[in-house]
Length: 503
Ligand code: ATP
Image (cartoon, rainbow, N blue to C red; front, top):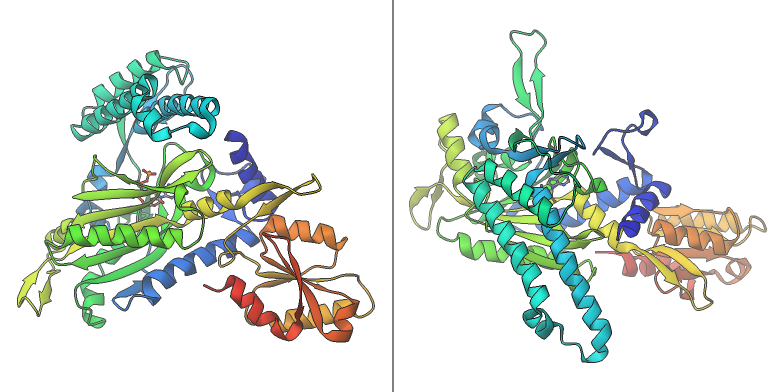
């Protein structure tokens, strides 16, 4: 697993997807830059989301609010008081951990033990293996999983009670039972606020303390009434937004899974109080469908319903994805009640109510939110797509099987050789196609090597121009995933590419 993840990170760097920020200065931890291919992939994911949420929903509109917001926003939203992570230091190793993540790591270790038993049994029983029956009857598997659940339950309860001493006690017990850090010398658990502070204004005394927004949602809430009125929106309706968010994360690991500067794609859906259960279920299903539409395999997704709820929520679930390091949160769906609007009303003194013409009454709408990290989605797509294949002749190829609709470059045009008028015809094809698709031109090296390079970059189609092309105006169209080649008239290229890559 670790090896797979290392490959993901190095492939992302080698092919112009993601690099450490300020790399020439040895980088900045948990901050990353998207290079030429990465910026395109990210843009395509963004558009794929925007189209599904805004363009295809008559009752959802999109906005683009500022990153800086009036500081009272974060008082009202609860972030000043409650946007904390519990932090613990190991005195020997001088390493800092997020206490809840550390506890989850212990639980993951137990789960790995359970998985090991399952794999062993699968090998032993072969085709007769009944996994369902095995996991519900095998004493060790049951024990590991029950222990895991009990640990998470205790963690949830302690955090809810703000009983940080018990979180520390739990970590100490776990470290004895299944050592992870190799050291038992811990500090107390402390709460650490994740917001980045900065100042607005030049002179020290008139400067105003600001925060970089830790989520995009609040920019939507403060615009709720403005958008509702000017857009003449009727409940139920949604407001969507894509933009940067900033969190001073304690555990900065796992590449772009957890960053200090990242992008969120969020949608707040405003509804009648009392209808939240129904809409919460609706959006859970709708969002899962969106993920499945990319064809990355339904077995790689699962829901995780939260027992421990954030300060604003009355129900919450994650859509988890199978990353190279296991199932982890990719997107959150939260039933936020009227928590945010009611608090903004309280702190701003402005009415943020909706008049419902059907009920003939005013009320503060309830909200169901869908919130996904663009970068995390990028990692899901990228890591899932990166594959090593053994070919019929025994050789291997590295191929980035990105969903074609998301691939940065849709087609590469390759003249077979660099003379006889082939480059000229290839350039003509590029000129023709570039109005509809991002296409690449490449004439370096033997054509086989060029194919492999395009495979590794994730380009779904290669168009090869040869001598026959000059005579009959046809080219070879090569498909990345199957490596199949077919002869296609140049005049049909646009339609054929469209069939493969359009949404
Ligand atoms: P986690 O428990 O992983 O810290 P969270 O529950 O705090 O995440 P939310 O506040 O619900 O996350 O944010 C919604 C989404 O934003 C997450 O599902 C994730 O995709 C993304 N996200 C949150 N924090 C980060 C981060 N530091 N880096 C990248 N993406 C993030």
